[in-house]
Length: 119
Image 1: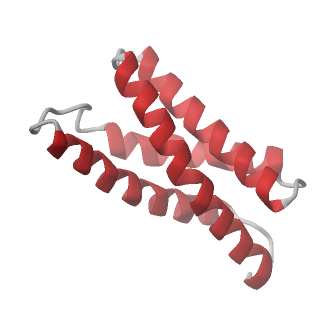
Image 2: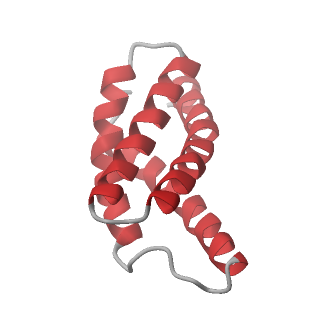
């Protein structure tokens, strides 16, 4: 079966679900201060899917770990670069760059491994 855009979209939705809960956790630690605007997660699903789709096809021929690493770094860096250019603070961008990478790497390893074995 061929890898399709819907697989990247599905993967991105799983990743954004984890990211949402991490974001809520950090926001509760700093007494409800809001880091980002309301459209942050909605836009991240759209742009993350597009970036993820391109990153997957760039890294497609690599071994599992290298593919997941390239995918995770590309999506994390490009999404956070976009938010930095929109005016988010550097502290926010660097914190969530690290968080996004930490979430994306294991999730992409699991997802790509399952895809390679069963789909």
